[in-house]
Length: 268
Image (cartoon, rainbow, N blue to C red; front, side, top):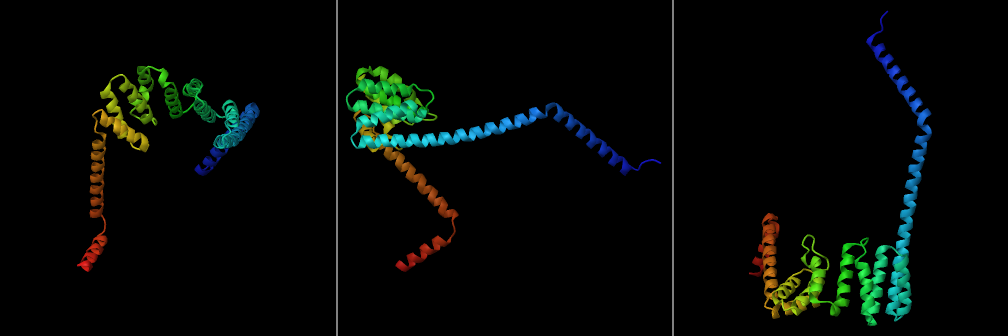
């Protein structure tokens, strides 16, 4: 008697399941220990990573507290104690905290008149490729400021040119680098280049008021009307803002306008 189609399907399913089970048993017999070992190794590695990450967070917190303690010693006029804390942090800390500690040590040395040692510490930070570029740029600017009187103006311009010329993205420290470069151009008698740089500084958003004021004065002295440029830019911004506000009023509901009309009638 022939099997019905339904029975054939059930038989094929049972055979298929038996084959799969046989294959799984074979794999486990041959590679079971390796598979289990691999899973355990992955779990141990993941657990180790979590522990390491936690320890890193704890260490960074401790280093932040150490840095704050050093700053507090400086504020309380304990430069030697602060320097000891900073030296320890520079030697044992995270690269970023170590860099900040080195830069603060440089500032301490500069305050005592040791500009050569201060510049050397800044140069060390500026050359550290493990650090964020913005931090390295700041160190290079400070190094150049400490060494300025011993450098030729052309060397200052060449050193800071990447920051001054950077467009996309612009350097975080453009204004400071541009001021040093503009001063060097001025010393070389390159008044057009100096004036153009001072004008760019004056138009840079977010510049410190003291630097902006110096830039406007120097630009004006060199024939660049940075005040007029800023005034025209401000007027254009105001015009754009007014146009956008008017467009928003047109798209808004009529209720505010009706209320305003009612108040005007009350006044009349």
